[in-house]
Amino acid sequence: MVDEAKELAQKAQAEKIERDRELNQLRQQQEEQKQLAAQVKQIIELNRLPRDPEGLAYNFTDDNKVKRLYVSETMRDQIAEGRLAIVKLGQQYEVVSAEAARKIQSRDTAGVIVFNEQNKIVDAVDDAYAQYQVPDDLIW
Image (cartoon, rainbow, N blue to C red; front, side):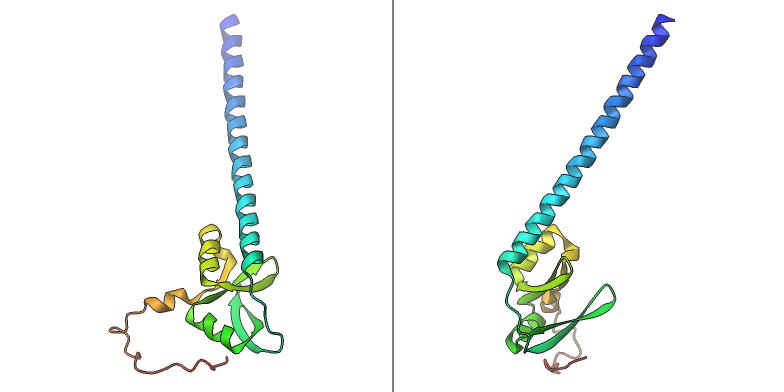
């Protein structure tokens, strides 16, 4: 009877240790996510560029919804070329440099909404339409 009680006590202790370990691991993951979110917020706040409310509309999609930012013509061209990117901060959208977008992307891929960096990778040899220029003023 004594051995049985010892075994039950040891088993309960082992289960408690396992639960505590899992809870600590969950808390640690939550803390890491908070830290990453704070880092992303800080990167955006330090690197955001001023928008031009009188400028041209730049349309993009986020979560299958068309969104619009008003930026200068230079900024719109730089976004199209991949030198600038659009990122999400809470419910707002901000324009940041490509370097800042890469830092954000390494921490939170969902935070970067428009980053045309991959357009530079297209191999011109395989592209049948490489000889045709796409107008930058094309508005959809």
